[in-house]
Each structure stands twice: as C-alpha cells, then as structure tokens.
Length: 481
Image (tube, rainbow, N blue to C red; front, top):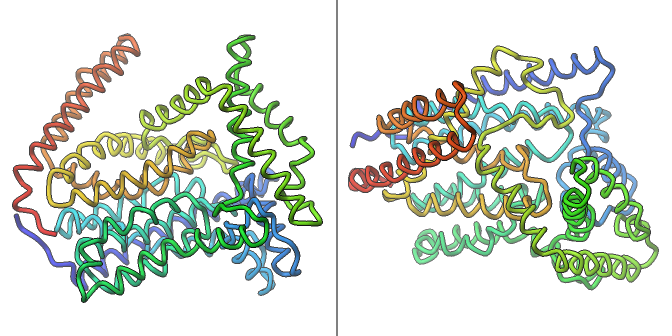
C-alpha cells in the first residue's frame, strides 16, 4: 500500500485549511452577534455563563469559588484575564476560535496516521472545518468548544505518541491534558486506562520518561482536586458536582418519567417543574457556596447525595430505562446537530448550507461505523479501543444525567472524522450506502413503516461493518503504523 510522508508540505496545507476554518468561525461569530443585536438578544450567553462570570469576578476580587464548578476553572480564568485587560466577556468566543487552527492540524494528522496518505489528512481537516456543531456552540461563553479543541488535540497527541513513540507528541499531550481537564471533567476517567495503552512506550527506555509525563499530565487535575476536596471538606472525590447532577437532573428526570406513566402528561413540562422544585431545596444554596464553615457544606453535600442515591435505588428500573433511552437516542441519532442551545440554529442563518451539511454528516454517521470496523481489523486496533473508551466515559455519565446532547458528542464526533475518511476510501462503503438508499430510505419516503426502516437500516449497517472488518483484516498487512 502506498504511503505519503507527513512532511512540511502536508503540515502547511493542513495549517491553511485551519486558517480557512478560523475565518469561517470568525464570520459565524460576527453573523450571530449581528443577528442577536437585531433581535435584542445576547447569543453569547448560555445557561452556565452567569456561573462562569461570577467565578471570574471572584478570581479578580479574591472571593470564594462555587464548589460545584471549581474544577472548571479555565473558562473563568480566561474571562478574568479579559476583564483585567479591559475587554468584554463577549470576546471569549473569538479567543477560543484561535484554537481552530491547531485542532484542524491535529484532526488531519489523525487522518494521515490511519490512512498514511496526504489526501486522507486533507479530507479529515476539511470535514472538521465543516463540522456544524462547533459553529452552533462556538458563539457561547461556555466550556463546549474550548473543551472540544483542547481534548481533541490531547487525544491526537496521545494517540500519535502511542503509535509512533514520538517524544515531542507525548510531551505535548502531557501539557494539553491538564488544560482540557480544567475545562470539563468529561474525560477524567481516561487516566485509569492510559498506562495500559502506553505500555510499549513505558517499557522503552527512550520514551519512558515522556510516557510517564503523559500519564502524570492526564492524572494531575483529578488528583489535585481530590486532595483539595479532602483537605477542605473531608470528601474523597475529584469532583463535587455529583450531588447537583443526581439531585437536580437525574432524580428530576426519573420522577418526571414516573409521573408521565401515571398521568399521561408530556414529560418535558413535568421535568422542568421537577428541576425547579429541586433547586428550591434549602441545601441547594449551601452546596453552591452559601456556607460559613466547611462542615456545613460537607453535611449538605453528603445528605443531598445520599437522599438522591436512595431515591434512585428505590426507582432503579425507571432510572435504567431513562438512561438507556437517552443513550439509544445518541447512538441512533449520530451526527445530529439540531439542538437549539441558546444560539440560533444553522438552518435559520444558513439554510442552503444547512441542507448540504445535513446530508454530508448523516453519511458520516454511517461511514464512522465502517471506518471503526475497518481500522480495528488492522494494526491500529488500540486506536479504535482508545477512542471508543473515550466515547463510553463521556456518554454513560451524560446519559445518566440527561446531558447527552450534541454538545456532549462533539469531541467524539471530531475523533471519528478520520475513521469516516478511512471508510470513504472503500468502494464497499458506498455500495452499502446505495443499498440503504434503495432498500430503506426510498421505501420509507413512499410510506413504509418506521419499524421497517429501522430494521433494514440496522441490518445493512451491521452487514457493512462486518464486511469492512473482513476487508480490514485482508489489508492489515499492508498498513503502516
């Protein structure tokens, strides 16, 4: 199999594609800001923006931080830096957008690593630049896109170091992981498994210190906050967000589901009312910083956590049902980006582009399955397992807490793009897509039942995955690490 070197020319082309992405993201931020000014709405303000704003002011004033959000310090630190420079919080999306360039290079780098071709790198980078959810959330003063860029770069550097033994990429990963973890704790669990994926580099004397640095970097933030929480509150936990997640979100969703089955009312308004009631609990302000002594926080936190766990134990069956329902929705609605999360939807601002992206990324969802199977059968099986492990660590907790929307899927969507490109190079993938069109989509348009559509689609995708796996085994000997 022909291979292309990852030389300066490839790097410059990827950087050029990244600059194109920076221009497009800048235009999108300007367009959304202008649209918001027209309708009298600040579209950069998301649900968690006020919390980050208060934390930023507390940093400048030397005040107390909200324990529920203390591990998400990078966004408040950036906001505090902007304010110290006399700038507005609305410039935050512009600062974050600068990371589009190195992240595009990282995704293209992954495409080259899996395909060993410059073309695979270019197409992977272009697909990432087109990824619509990043534009949807990139206008907000939130953690979503910042975590996307930092986590993708950290994952790409880790995987490259894992496969090639590059000391520079392992050292870069060691620096990027603490930054990604300070944005959102979604991938903290990877620290337990990274040594197993880096065992070859740990056994090699030339790369041992750099692999140890990567393992230390990914574990630094969780261990730091575990020590701080133990010293301050006597609670052994890296994150203090569990009580809020279970009490406000998980218990409210389970309660709304139970009430829906009893009364037949729609679940959404019942859920919203349950969330409002949960926030009126007298312990709610205490766990968010309204306490004089650490013991007050510890008592409120532990009692709220225990009450939530007891409620979920009592309604274990309903909790499993709602969690599986949310996870199944994410698995079957891959690459969907219709969540209207404060910012205007893409179909409002860019109706024609939206239609094209809808088709492209629906195809990408199917191709990602074939790409994972194809790559798994070759010499990059550990890369597939590492990416899928990240998927599990992000989606199981988010499905439990009803947060598994497009914003939680961005990192994994970006990491799947190189696998999509690997599958798109196989004629088999296009044949299966044609079979899906003829055997499932067109009959559905002509009146076939939804059950028929789902059954035929699942059978064809599974068949395509199996055939991709067999094809990957045959071509595995020709692959390069």
